[in-house]
Length: 233
Image (cartoon, rainbow, N blue to C red):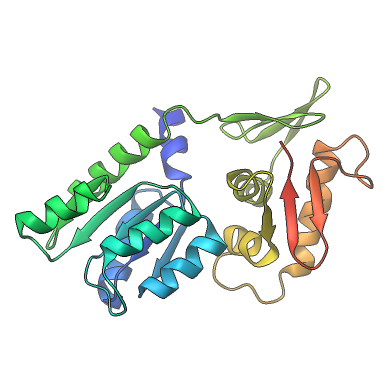
């Protein structure tokens, strides 16, 4: 149960709804249940930006958004990253539900909703979608076990701090691709990013000391000058 809890709760959830009060309510429901990595957006445009910067693992979408509908937004999100979609909307006609599911949505819920039902459906989608995901990954000179929050390099074990774990997790989600410094700071420190760039570089340096044979000449965690970092699997 603990392993499944960690597996589900560490997933990054994007919530898209134009009602600020409802956004805050859904976020609080998820956080009280143990989800800690959450991004919110009040429009389709904000959702697209969030997908480029925070790399969500699942999106909860309203259908009625101020700049476009959630059905077309789902298609654009999946052009960025192929993630499961849960529609949560006031549109309760059967034809709307059929449209959402037929377009590729993983589930469809109508408002008002029961918090417990939302959590059960959300967890079921995450378990289905990520059941074969590796929790242990291999780099050039080490393995990272995300469930145990530790690195094993040539028989030596190095524990990961919570922030090191968060940084490596978002790098792994976009393995072999550039992840911006803003995206890494958002994952590790939340919305207040000001002043954390130097702290991020210090964390990157400590991570390299654990995963690289020669930290000054990294092979797995590469700096992309002026942009961010890349994790090479």
